[in-house]
Length: 345
Image (tube, rainbow, N blue to C red; front, side, top):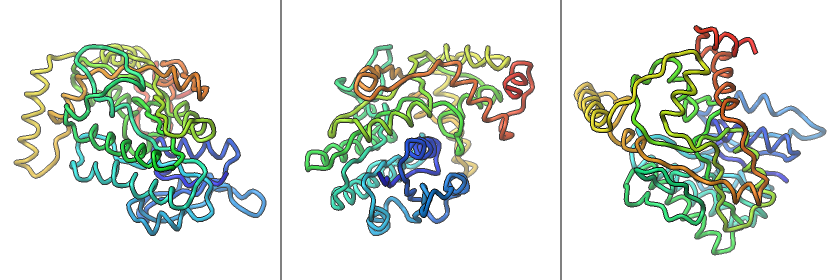
């Protein structure tokens, strides 16, 4: 299959590109003009008369560019999006919802045989107590009103509406992604920040921690075997934040930061926001981020395991490989015996 892939210059999209190529598929990566594509260009080694990976320049919000990139493609995997809590609601909605309308709408018009949308377990929202959700669970993202959560929910709603109109699209919902290759400092950078002592304290909450390589394989399996119109959670290990912090500290040899009450964290974040506004900058910690961190989003991947053959590697392997990658690329100094051992491994 020739697959149009958006978001291929990112953490997850890059892993999906590698997995598609390893599975024998040709990939056309849609990347914006200003995007650094050096990592992708290294994958575009010639095979016969054509490269297994080719680049198409354009924005996922530009219908003409998307239609041109889709020409000759059998399928599309839309991983492009914006993650985090610092971007404006408008920017999040454009990247996570409007782009779905453009890319999957064009895919429906072009008559692709298969499509996959990268959604997120963020569409489920979160709860203040630990409970395990699955694809049948009613989420509360709308009620929480956190712009990132709502934008991902809107994107998923667009995809499922297009599925009802005949687009053979499968929706996958990755959880909190760790592993090597986080080139832009997104989710896996949290582990590195903990080891670099850039997170002075934390609030208790919980998430499901998965590996980018497992999630990439889940995408390819969804493309080949997923049932159109269905959603699949690609989760991992359900851990409280305290469990994550403790294990990362043990594996790295670095002291864990303290846990603080939610009220204290919200007050500190409010002060950061105030100083940032006065100084014309951007707060590293916001009250919205704190509120999100204090939620639990534990999930079950049983459906993906059963229907897609989705697998979850050990948590320690995820963390070690995240740190190895950061050390190898100079993003983390091996200052402890544990980190030196990882860097030498």
